[in-house]
Image (cartoon, rainbow, N blue to C red; front, side, top):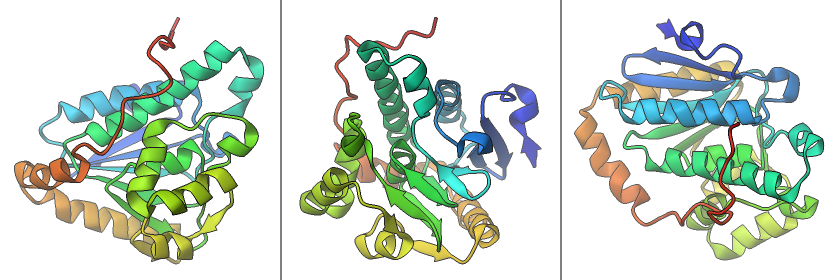
Length: 242
């Protein structure tokens, strides 16, 4: 097992482990409940590009450290710089990362180890497969808080649960548990704790990685075909990394 944190991911809030054709990406910001700070999103974007170009990576797993999967956007960044243009640029960066995840040739698996909130839930929604712990929770509170939902998140939610249920979830902003996740179809397996989740996710991902990449791609292509809209907000809100 190779931990690539020592090879350039240190300080980004993201860790990558590669084993047997599986790339395991883990958000590692426990002090902020694994919130998606800009540095995490930029590192995710970079890693997704590298993974997409890597013929040896056959499966990608996304998870978080501790007992929270991802608390969504880092609201402290919004508070420090609340200018509308900057806020929309951050939403656009989230949308770009989610769209790149949907664009990967490799199968993607979300191992939801706890609360998945807003864009954090979006990370798991855009994956092909989602496993979860029994006490995980899911919520998109953006609309209730006056923020904008990335279109790729909303479109994927509609694809999974249908437009009426998606409307209730997004507009109502309620919190849903793992039982509801299994019943409505955005997760397929639930495990008692994080240890079991990690073990079973590794097992499933390793099994998939034993298959030819072209065969895997023959399934992921139709699964994602014409499923996602263009990123949002509008293109004039380009991300400024300076």
